[in-house]
Length: 98
Image 1: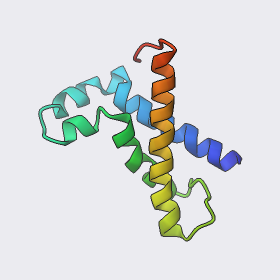
Image 2: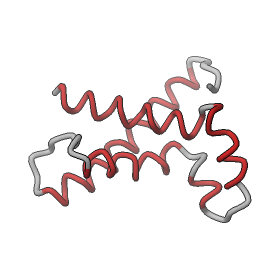
Image 3: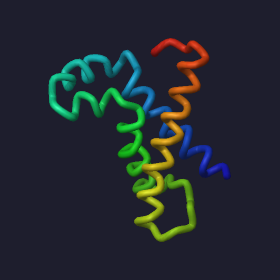
Image 4: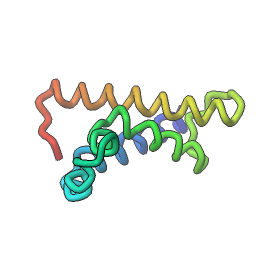
């Protein structure tokens, strides 16, 4: 359970910093005109998939008990769902962007 919580928090943290943090605003502004990539780096649901896959490949997988390739694919989906859920929850609570 602790492994899953660490995975979720790490995925949300990295995704939120890149997608909404002021420190990455110049990167997002630079990539905005690039078709596909400009939208992808601003979408928490989109960006969290490779973040989750990356964490799983680095050994911080949610531990589904499935074969490694399934665990890695599931990590992307789990990270995407959690990051989107957190983004919606924070926006509904009136939390401003970083």
